[in-house]
Image (cartoon, rainbow, N blue to C red; front, side):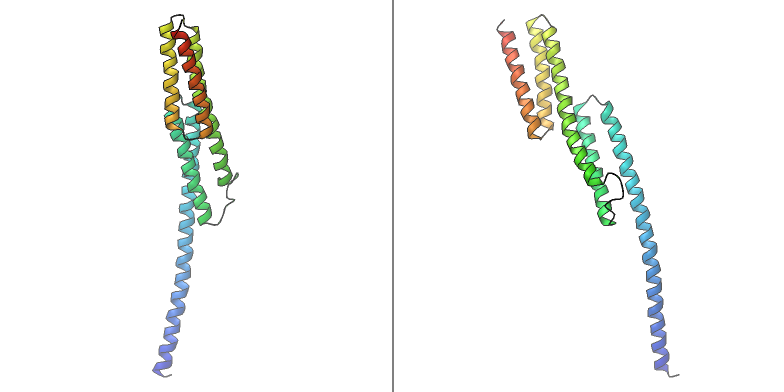
Length: 178
């Protein structure tokens, strides 16, 4: 055999070997990426579950909001992982549906949380006999509303808070005039 033929056969052999090794490398790389994605999914789900537990127990508005934000951030990570690995239905419910549900739940829970605290302060103020103490307690309710307005951007909730604030200011006016 001529050196040229040997060189061509050797070159094809090397190219074939590189292709084979590269396919094995891609397979190993894909398995590694799949394992990392699985770990990321497990961690996101763990963070979501821990946040849901904290939400169910918290009495602090800032904690409630930050935990919902944490959940939504982790759902976004799950959506990205699902898109990257072309498996949008890897969990039930799918991450997109879960995000919509959590977003709706967030708004309902925030509104209820704030209004429950404000209604508690109003009921407490109505039970107090001294006008100055009533006003002081109603001022606490207004502070809770203002905190809610500062932390919330949902227009529907803001409207409810505005209405509740107007009600409290009317009550303060009544107590000041007695």
